[in-house]
Image 1 (cartoon, chains in turn red, orange):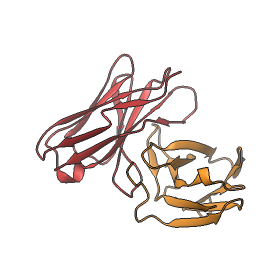
Image 2: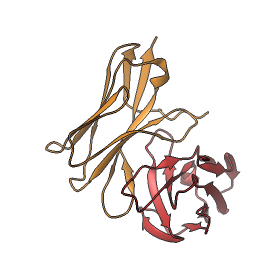
Image 3: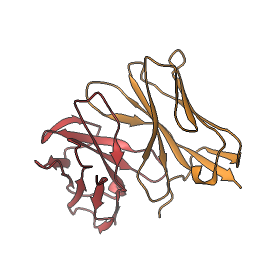
Image 4: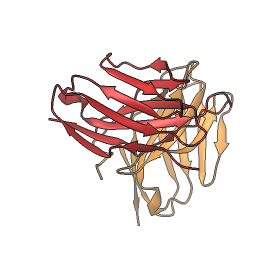
Length: 114
Length: 112
C-alpha cells in the first residue's frame, strides 16, 4: 500500500504566472481534498474531488481549480498567482462510502510566489 | 524543513509527564472531530478521532475528550516523549462532504 505523494516538493513562481500541483492518492482511496497552509497557520480547505467532480469548495476564488483523474490522482491549478498564494499546499486522500472520514495527508508542495 | 509552529500557542512539558492540549470549536453542527500531529516539513498525521455521539475515546497513549455543551475538545498524551514534539491541530467536520476545518494549532515542546 503506497501513501499519498505530491509533486513537486518545492516551487518558485512569479506573480501572474500559473502553477499546477500534483497528488497521487493512497491506494484504494477515491476522494482527494486540497488544503492551503500559510506559515504558522492551520490548513485551510480549498476543495474536494470525488468521482472526478468537485464535491465541495472552501472560500477560495475561481482561479483555484482542480481535476481528479480516473485513477483518483488529482491536480490543483492556480492561475494569476499572487504573493499571498505563497504557502504549503497539502492534498489528503480518503475513502468515501465506508463511513470513515479519516484523511491521509501528503507531505505538501511548498509554493513561493515572488 | 520549514517551521510550522511560528506564532502558535506553545505547551512545554517535561519528558514522562502527561500533556493536555485544548481546543475550542465553533460549529455546533459538527459531527466528527479529529486530532492531527504535524512535524516540521511534513503533512498532518492522523492521531485519533471521535464522533459527536461520544464524549471520550482512547487510543495508544492518547485520549480525546469531547464536551459538546461548551464546544471543547482536548487531547491527552500520556508519558510524553521527545518524539511527541510537534504542532497539534484539532479539526472538525460538518456537513455532508468531508470538508475538515482546522483550528489554531498548539506547539508541543517536550523537555528531555
